[in-house]
Length: 183
Length: 432
Image (tube, rainbow over all chains, first blue to last red):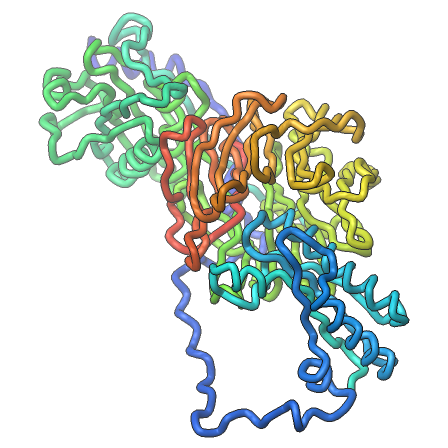
C-alpha cells in the first residue's frame, strides 16, 4: 500500500457535513466576561476597635427598625422540615403583630429560610411554607395581608455559616424585614 | 436580532480502512456497563503540525477523565516519528502495552483553515478502527479535539460520546452567608468558562434544552423569583410568565417545546407546565403538599417529580397531564431532584439518609435503586447526553460547593474540571 493510494481513497470517501455550532463567535451576542480567578474581596471594614457600637436597646426610638429588631424580634425559628409555628416563635409573632398594629404604615417582607440539609428546590418550597405560616399568624392577629409580602430564600441565605445542629437550627427561620413605613 | 453563527465545517472522511486491514472487527472494546472494568491503555502521541500537541492533550484528558481509558505517559513511547500516511510500528506500541493508538496530523491552509486527519488503531490486531478528517476554523481546534474524542469513545465503547458538549452551572464566590451566584458556562472539560449574569442577584438551577442552545434558569431577588429562557446564540433573555408567588425549578421537555416548573401560592407549591409556542400554562398538581423538581420522560408522556404528599419528600411519576401520580421511591430516607435520563432507562436523584447525601439512580418504576455517591452534601444530578455520566454539586462541611461527576456504574467518581466553586450543573446536548 502506498501513500498516494490512501490519499486517493480518502478523497473518494470524503463526506462533508456542515454544522452550525459554537456560539462563541456570535458577534451580536453580549460578550460574557471571562471567568478568571477574581481577586479576593477586601477584608470587611474593621470594627473600630475601642469604640463598641452604642447600646441600641436603650437608644432605639419607638417605631424604628431598631426598635422592631431589638425590642420585638425579627426572626422566628422552625424545626427540621417543619413550618409549624412553635411556642417560642408564637410569642415573638404576638409581639410582632402588636408592634405592627401600633405602626400601621409599616410594610414588611417575610423571608423564609431553610438549612442546607436539603435540596435547593425543595428548600425553596419549604422556605415559602415558613414565610406563609408567619404571614398567616400575623394576619390572624389583625395585621392586614396587604402590608405583607413573602419570599423564600430556600437555603441561599444562611445566617450561620456553621455545620452544627445549632447552626442548622438558626438557619431554619423566617425573617420579618421592614420594607417601608418605619420611623 | 439576526443570528450570526459561526459555521464550523466538520468534514468527516473515512480514510480507507480497507486498504490497511480487513473491515474493522474490533478486537479491543470497552464495556461501559461493567463496574469492575480496567481502564483501557491507550496512546495518544502529539499530532504532527500546528496545535498538534494541544489537540492530542485535549483528547488524552477527555479519555482519561471518562475513567474508561488509561492514557500512557508519552515519555514511554518508543516510536517517535509517526506519520499519518503510514502504519505505525505496532511492535513498538505492543511493547508498552498500548491497546489503542490515536495518531493524527494537522494542516493549516492559506486561509487559516485547520484540517485534522486522525486514525485509531487496534495495536494488537494491527487494524485501523477509524480514519477520519475534520476541518474547521483554527480557533475551533478544541472542538475538533472533542469531536475526535467522541469518535474514539464511540468506536471503542459502542456508546455515543459526550465530549463535544458544554455545561451551564452556577459559579459561586463570597462567604457562606453572603454567597454571590452567577450563571456561568464552560466546555465539559472546563475550558472557555464565562459568566452569563453579573452576580447582582441569585441565580440557580439552570437547565439546558436538549434540542437547542437555550437554557432556562431561576433568578431570585428580594421582591420575588422569576424563571427565564436564555438563548445562548442570540443572547435573548425572556422572563417566563408572571406569577404572584415563588416560581422555580424550571426544566424543558426533551423536545424543547415545554417547560415544567413549580409555582408557590400561599405557601403551597404545585407543578405547572407552559407550552412555549402558545405560552399557555396549565397546572398539573393541586394537592396541599410540596410538588417540585419536575422532569419529563424522553418521550414526553410522563413527568417525574418530588413531593412530600406522603409525609416526607419522595419521588413520584405522573402522566404529563398530571393524572395517575404514583410514588416510585421505596427505600428509607428522603428522595429529591429526580431527573429522567436521556435514554429513558433511569431516573437519577438526590437521596438524604442517615445524615449523608447520595446521588443515585433507579428504574422509572422504582426498581433497581443504586446509590452512586455518598458525602456530606451531594445534590442535583445532571445527565451527560449519552446517559453514561452524571455531574452534580458536592459540598464538604463548611467548605465551598464543587462540581463532581460520576459514571452510571458508580465506579468513577471525580471532581469535574472546574477548579473554583460551583453548583447546579446542567449538561448540554451534543453540539452540532
